[in-house]
Length: 277
Image 1 (tube, rainbow, N blue to C red):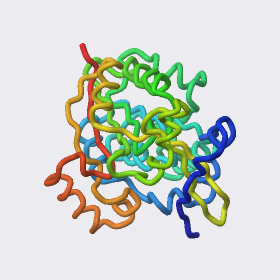
Image 2: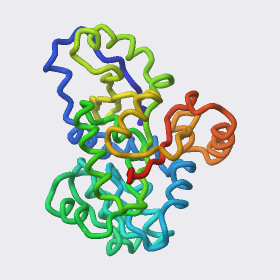
Image 3: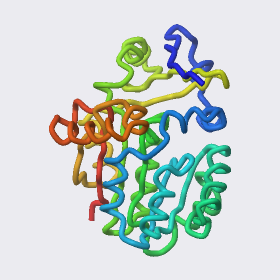
Image 4: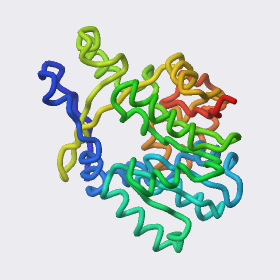
């Protein structure tokens, strides 16, 4: 089914279109099959980074795991113990079925943010070797204070030598028209700088979404305040994520381009950080 992005209304009154239920939106997104059609496989740069950082039989916290395009691969290749967290009931159901079909159910614990299973897992002694906030997950969290709280929570869940891997949308490349439309409302204090709303539309229905777009300086400032040291900031891709996850040939070309071009020209940032000792 075709899927397109439509512009948000910048004249809507606060409290109406601004209240997006991300869980409900992603239930629709996943149930339609369109999320998987847009992002059918892992981003090769992100997956390679995770493979390098995660030891064999290590512990991975995949926050915003969706249908498991990263965590299932690592549960298989690295015999990893995975805690897969997602706000979407549909995503968790699909992930559980996929893990079972791949004979990985004993390696993957699936939970909802803040539930008892999640709290028990992130409190386990020793911590996680890697925590992943993949493609755009942190950007869907509205409010800097809430994003910082999540970063702090994941920092405390990491082992002393663990790493946080972030995929963040680049404000210099993404949704430029939407940023211009929302600029007056940012100036009025209704939104934070970098906030937008947009829709994904398909035959399955309209999916309203919130996004916070990031700039380099903001990334360093937020991670520093949350108690991290940035080890590396590079591009997640130069081409749109849907392109590099649908075409292996273009993914290879894109990977080479990311190595040659400045990170600020990327479609998204790929950030590796560690807890500050």
